[in-house]
Amino acid sequence: MLEISPQKVVHVIFQAREGARAEAELAAFIEALNEDEQANLVAIAWVGRGAFEPEDFAEAVATALAEKSVPTSHYLMGMPHLAENLEAGLDALGVDVAREEEDFL
Image (tube, rainbow, N blue to C red; front, side, top):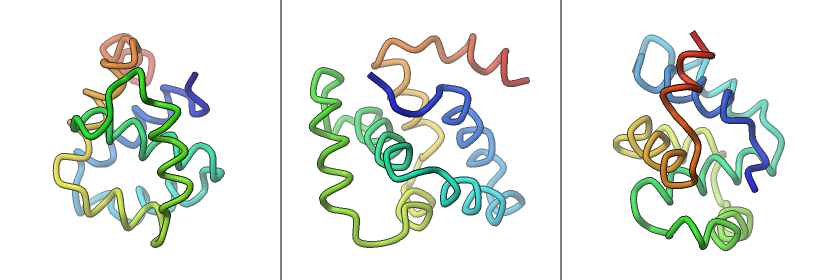
């Protein structure tokens, strides 16, 4: 079960797509999330890029919590294809990304 709302993930996706124009805002948004939300965000990205299978999501969250060594915003913003990874991760976890994006807009 996700411990971050899909709307927050979609917010990160949209800001990541903006690139440098939204960099400071994206970093602040990610760092304002609580520890569990940050770990879930990282785990969603990992599922999206294929590092974990959807059924191993809880393990991905635990790994994100255990292995955190830099601010989450730095880690995620340095990840190539962050927006695409998050979209793919949400989709793999059964979240209707298109619907969430419509609700976000």
